[in-house]
Amino acid sequence: MAARIEHLVTSGTFSLDGGTWDVDNNVWIIGDDHEVIVIDAAHDAEAIAEAVGGRTLRAIVCTHAHNDHIDAAPGLAERTGGPVLLHPDDLPLWKQTHPERVPDAELADGQVLTVAGVDLTVLHTPGHAPGAVCLYAPALGALFSGDTLFAGGPGATGRSYSHFPTIIESIRERLLALPGDTVVHTGHGDTTTIGAEAPHLQDWIARGH
Image (tube, rainbow, N blue to C red; front, side):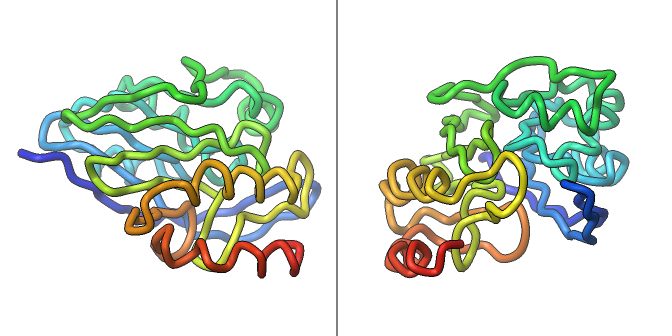
């Protein structure tokens, strides 16, 4: 059975800098009938564990440590035994949500995670958060962009730990260099492609978000 991409939408809240907002998050599951990786364990550990089913969970990858992307990670790890992986630059954000539990291992730029015969390369893409990462799976023609790149532009940079020039550099240097037909599976909202977003870079810079 070839590796495939499965998609779950979970709902909850995002809180930072004293504000709280209702959000829907995309949870991505990559693998086959035997083993999977979960990208962003958001809101509902039980629903995600149910989607994983009896398969081995190789890793719970956090694209960044905003609470809406990691709130269910410890619960999912507890249910499945899967290790939680986070870039160390996002530990200060992680500790706001989970002060009593640290991630199980660190993500590093260029690191390759393999599941069901498919390689996912970690791309460190700071800007939305210091330790934000994307995962690129060339065999699937897919990029899992977290909150770095969306259909319509970069992730938000108006709050603590974020920086607009940095996210623009991450997108320009790391993401827009990928093949245009790469499908971008985002942290929220609709899927897009690198080719659909690339022509708009200057517009984003001009508008400043």
